[in-house]
Length: 334
Image 1 (cartoon, rainbow, N blue to C red):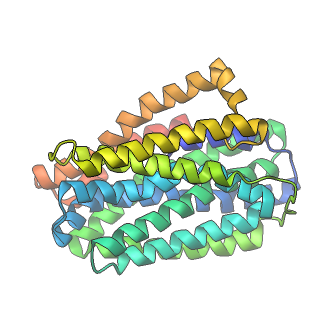
Image 2: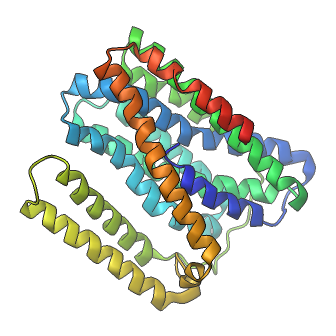
Image 3: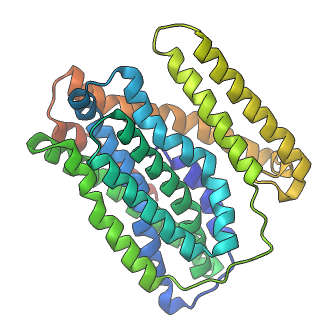
C-alpha cells in the first residue's frame, strides 16, 4: 500500500502503451505481470507486521525502525521514473526480470541479516528492485491488451495485488507467532522464483530502443535530494533537535532537489520529469490528491499493527487479520 501513489501514476503509462502481443498470450502476460507486482505489495505487508519483532530482536531504536521503512521507500520513490527509461532503452522484459532478481537478493539479505546495517542494505535492494518492477511490469501489461481491454486488465492486476496484501499479513503474523520474522522474508523467495520463471516463459521479448535517453543526472539528484531530506527529517524525530548533522542533510537534500528542478528545466521534454507535465492542472491535482490521501493512509497502515502488537500486546496474527476487511473493499473497488 505504500506504493499506491506510484502505481496510480504508472497505471496511466500502462493504459497509454500500444498493443504489441496477441490476445492469446495476453492472459499469461497479465498473470506474470501481476505476480511481479505482488512482490511490491507483499513486501510492505510483511514489514508492517514484522516491524515490532524486528525492533525487539535487534534492539532497535524508534529512529532505526523508521529507517527500516525508509530504506525501501526512498529508492522506490526516487528511481521509479528512471527505471522506466531503462526498460525503454534495454528492453522491458529484461529490465523487469533484473528487478525481480534484485528484489530476491534483498529479501535473502534481510532474512540472514546479523545486524542493523545488512538489514538496511537488504531493504534498500528491495526498494531498488520494486522501483524497477513497477513501471516495467505495468508497461509490459499495457502492451499486451487492446485499448478497450486495458482498463479491465489493470483492474484485475490491482485486485490481485490487493488480495495478496490482505492475505500476507495474516500468514506473516502466524509465522512470527510460531517462528521468527526472518522466515517471513524467506517465504518471499518462492514467489520471486515463480515470478522469474513465468516472466521468462510468458512475457514476449521486446526490442531495446537505442535512441531513448536516460536522465542519469535527474535520477542521481532525485535520489540525493529525497534521501538526504528524508534522513534529515527522520533524524529530527529522534528528539535531539536541529543538530549539525540534521542541518547538513537538510541543506544537501534541498540542494539536490533544487538542482533537479534546474536540470529538468534545462533538458525540457528529454527530462525524467518534463516541466510541461506541471502545466497540466489535472496532473498536478491528481498528484496532490494521491499525496494527501496515501501519505496519512501509509502512516496508519504502518502504525496500527505496531501499536496493536507492542502497545496492546495482541498476537501478530490478530494484527495481520485486522487488514483483511480493508483489502476486501479495495479488491471490490478494483
